[in-house]
Image (cartoon, rainbow, N blue to C red; front, side, top):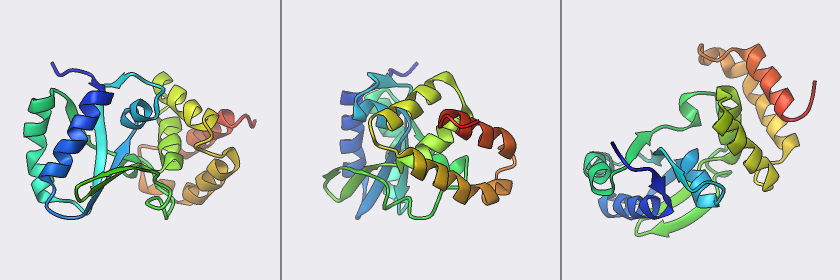
Length: 174
């Protein structure tokens, strides 16, 4: 059983990513990892992330990093679950740079939409924190949902009417 990923473990993992990378890389941190680094959660079950470009050296090092820091590492992001509005990289807030690796929070708008789509209690709490902390503007969130709605057919596991209702309820609309 792996330990929960707290701030210290996440930062150690980021340093491990930087040591493993073989060139300029951006690592986008997602979900509970963002929640821990932004300060509203003490820990998360796993460190979800997506590297751009994919770096084989970094990816090959993942099993060793998992063992070294006793955490779960997952290549996962909203891109895997919902359409993500174009320009997500530019909406991904910078965290810090270690060596040649720049770390960013994955686009908060995409994170909130993915969390609403999943609908789990912890996801909804995280989505609300993004909104309450001013990291996501409700009007822009609605606009991004409207932008991706025509592309939901590409994600057959997503029920578009249910997702749309959930976004409306989250934003306080009927």
